[in-house]
Image (tube, rainbow, N blue to C red):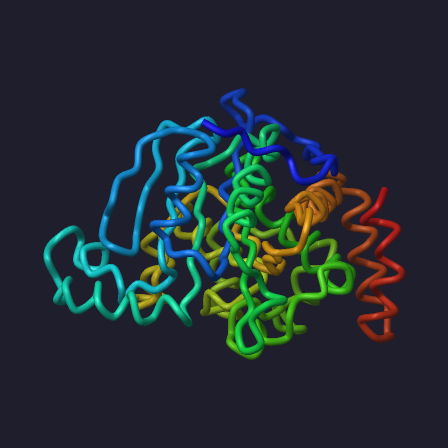
Length: 325
């Protein structure tokens, strides 16, 4: 069984709070979209490199369990092509037709790699998987003229309370112009409705140093301003975890799976770039958590933001110092 080497030596930074309330190393799920190889070819290549057992869920969706890099799934990124999942495991929508359509759609619909929760001190394993996919011709955003592929992180929240969730959200919106300058996401993703920023009025509301509401008010305010998954930091899965009834009453038809994680959706996936690593994007997320953990500095940056009257690109230069401290 071949061993895939790390593509780069970029350091993965650790967040200021590495362990959760139970004392365990926090985890992060990683999602990477790519094109080129079929889901089956991709999972076979990963199994060849790292071992494990392949489970076929349908002709375009596979799970790999027990590998050296943990459990993961690879599938065409379209719910329509996986009727058993859509129908809760029942036969559902004409599986043979879905399978046939999936073979045709594989030329235009990307695959998605989804890892199981990875301990934050073992994220190098994701780079090892991506090196394998690159080796069999996986393509990224730079290769798709009409589509942009995303890299998503789902970091476990360090403490399950409103103040922790809000501190991270405050930090994120205050650092957002800097993040967007550094990440430089493909404009196609905004046009397709995948990673829009938060509304300016909501940003100003939550940036205020005296805005620290209780959980119910926090959730109600968020839902009123953001009744959508289309945010570069999607909090709906986390809020659903906190209060499923409240979220479902506001968004009865939205696809939301509750979990105690943030859903950071801003970066692009550039799988085919030689030596591309997820480390720089992860390290920018760590910068968000670092500012969130320093309440005095967070409130000071919020006050400075509310007093600032310039453009986003100028604020990015100003807030960069807070991000890199």
